[in-house]
Length: 202
Image (spheres, rainbow, N blue to C red):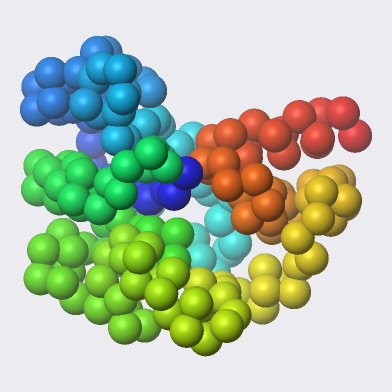
């Protein structure tokens, strides 16, 4: 799964829950499936661990872009069975049209405003959630274009389960989650749960 994150100010989890039910007529959350049914495109949940999982400089940049501390954070996992481009952009745009916030995709650390998403603004030559563009660029370069937007500490991690366990045991949770997602292809929540289990067993 691929993921995007939405960080909101001046709201509550209850207000977000009400908004999603009102707009999407989905079941009461958290953990909303959109569309609500057999084969959803999007899996939406509250993202409780954002502060703990962000590096200090990334958190400072997020607070600056948002104009303060996030009150509510969402993680949106996009199904691997569907492209999901339009659905995720529509979802994020709808939420940001109704609530004050910014979004992040997993390809850059840029905080995307609603205006940037709607206008097709580009960072590092790509619009918001351009996973196909990043993939094509990676194939053309013969390396990982996605890695070019990552901090050096993430680029040098060997992609093995042993390194994932070592990172988790040494307290490098963000790197462990990232490495496990690269190896397994799972979404953020699944990777976080896996790393949490390693930490508890340690």
